[in-house]
Length: 200
Image (cartoon, rainbow, N blue to C red; front, top):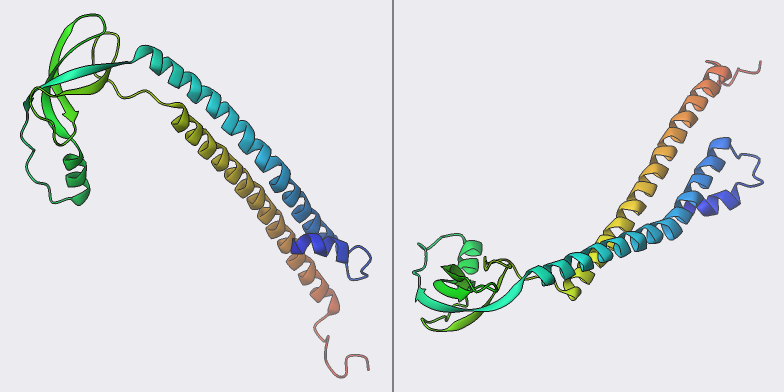
């Protein structure tokens, strides 16, 4: 914003250089792009991501089926791990040998994760594909929306960073040009500039 104010301040100043105006113009263009283009990119990206995620969620819901599995046997815990993250993930689920019938009527038995208090004979919910193979829970609409919003915010943020990076590159190039012009001006001034007897 300081550079935008600088554009107004430099409009009739006799000390104004081309690089000053160009720097202020770069700041103005960057501000407009960040305020208008970045939100548009974020909105577009979020909308596209939301559409794709909703389609994926619908496909998953069509291909995955909730079933009830019966605990046949509770399996022992694996050896204690010193890593607290691994230990907490292990304690959140209990490995059990379970039996279930797939949507196509096929019988299945295998090792699954159940809640920590699962007992033999207890029934719990699982998700399977059309052939009865265990799969993850399908994506729900709320999660799809959350991911789409995050994608939109990320796209807007990346756009703003790229625009500001381009502005900084322009300013860096302008500063190099100023230093070159200053060097030329110092050479023109001569070696005796500033001496008391320079005009005599």
